[in-house]
Amino acid sequence: MIKQAIIPLAGLGTRLLPLTSVFAKELLPINGRPGIEFILDECIEAGIKEVIFIISKKKEMIKKYFFNDSYYKKIIKKKNDIRIKNEYKKILKYKKMIKFVYQNKPLGTGDAVLKTKKFIRDKFFLMLLPDDLIIKKNCSKSMIKIHNKYQSSVMASMKVSKKSVSRWGIYKLGKKINKYNFNIKDVIEKPSVLKAPSNQAVIGRYILPKKIFSKLHNQKPGKGGEIHITDAIQSLINENNKFIAHNFSGKYLDCGSMNGYIKSNLEIAKL
Ligand code: UTP
Image (cartoon, rainbow, N blue to C red; front, side, top):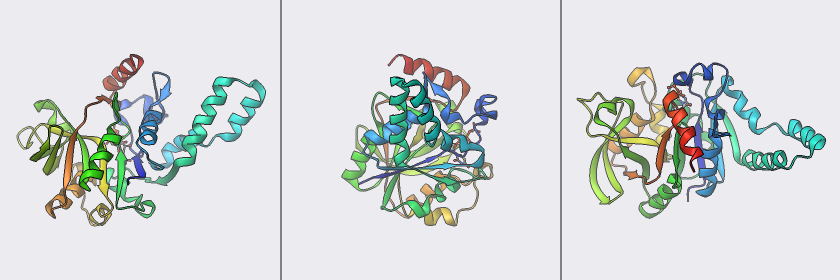
């Protein structure tokens, strides 16, 4: 059973400047709600009991958002507003399941994952990248079902345009399992159009094995000088660990770029 999730939040968010010069992008409202709440709801609905946030000193406002009890209590006492009361209850529910670890230098997603090592108890855990919202169908829930069936790692995937492959982790398709699921042969971080083995991209939902930590421990920086989770996954694939690509059926929204963020607001308003 997958009961723990990790969420890397320690990146700089440069693509959303100037909004992110003083604000954590994960708290930016999407149709009136901080983006991170959509991610937490996906986790709760998928049966996750504990979520580990990887933050940095610069992003401590995320911690404050969930741990602001005395402020809420004062306001509720004064105003007795039902909406605020309900919001507070919801935040208390999130607070109970969140733990924090710090990555003060953004050395890459792989390095962020490594910071959670001592908290992970089971053989597998879920990772969600908060820039990637998937609406209309709970992608994490579907992936957990696949994991339970095959007892393997799973990554969310979708086809992207050929010219945009250099923005993504791209994988080489192996044997087809069924209409939505494939074995992954190789995965490459942000390949050039010429070097991309396909136009199937990894999207920000991963079920990873605990043994990925030992790979990350010894991993040298890769593309752009960062420690990428993709490179650790490739090392595991090289040792015949099974990774399944799940072509999810929900709708993908990219909240990490300015255009994507604006579009996400419009899409969620339509729900
Ligand atoms: P990205 O590299 O896509 O986004 O990281 P970013 O760094 O936040 O933003 P840009 O590219 O400068 O606009 C993907 C996810 O991994 C986290 C980010 O917070 C984001 O959720 N991350 C990235 C870390 O936690 N640590 C890192 O060292 C790098």
